[in-house]
Length: 131
Image 1 (cartoon, rainbow, N blue to C red):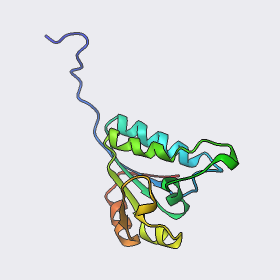
Image 2: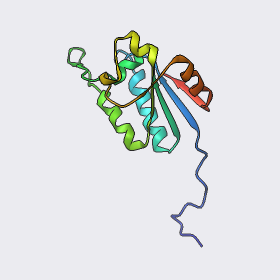
Image 3: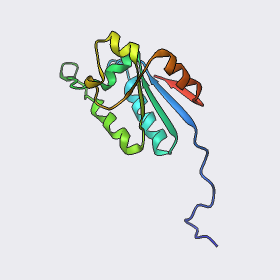
């Protein structure tokens, strides 16, 4: 007989979630909300993929100075993703290049993919949320 605190129920299914960050890090709540949702999904041991494209690539740019706009720079928080086993981070190549950035400019290691590779990754997902 199991103890009352032991859970004999199987855990829910692991689902494949992709979070697509397309917006600049400041000026709206989208970037910070996305990060919070990703951390929650990871805490529930879901299969999390995180994509940065368009102005979303600025969310993970190093050395952001937010003093002039009076908000906290939350980009270092992306380093915490590794502790939640969120290791599938992708940046769209065209978005990175068109903004004059390289992977050396980013606060976390990412895999750079082109539009076709990104489309293939999207096909593999069960849920895609765009922020």
